[in-house]
Amino acid sequence: MAAPSTFTPQLLRPFTAVGNALLKAAGRTGHMVEFFGRVILAVPIMWLRFRKEFLRLLSDITWGNGSIVVGGGTLNVAGVLGVTAGALVAVEGYNALNLLGLGPATGLVSSFATTRELAPVMIAMAFIAQAGCRFTAQLGAMRINDEIDALDTLGINSVAYLVATRVVASIVAVVPLFLAALALAYLSCQLVSVVA
Image (cartoon, rainbow, N blue to C red; front, side, top):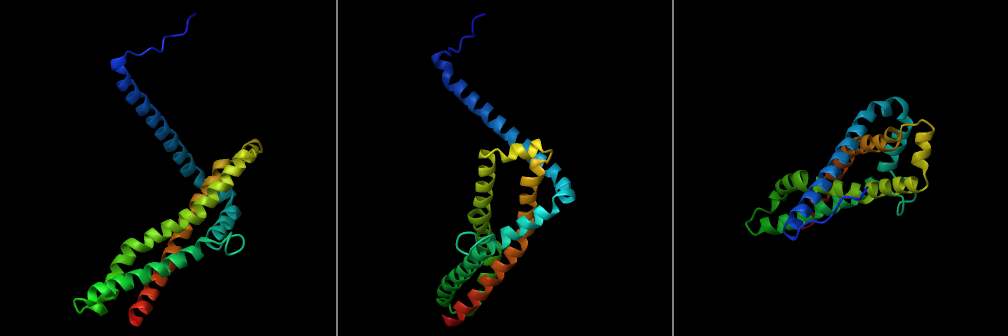
């Protein structure tokens, strides 16, 4: 039997290209939604069977697993970013408000700008820089070395063990890290505005 023809008339090629792109995007979206659903359904299994791995990853996210420079945790990066954000708000806020004679109101600007905008962005950047890259490298190396397939062969739910533990540990770690970065931002804003 002959293979079906793949010829597309010249006028229909842009429409078929758009249609194929939409189908690919819908397929990728479906795969992502299915994976997210598997992760959410794996959370109860993770709480029952992999609590020690969750606690290990929580410690790894927050404090790190090695030296401060290479394997430092997110707390160090969040602290540095919080101090930097607070100092930035203090310098810019004081300079702008001092033109109007409202230099002491820098704390008000800091309370709005830091709490609503800068501290959440700083924590997101810290997670991207530290935990996100570390998780990607770990899981990628495990996939290359067929360790994930070995876990499935041993009967260990790889989504619950590898993904759900990391997701829940990240969710638990983000609130204290946010509060630490926020406190450091307020403190550095206070110190910089008093010096200025």
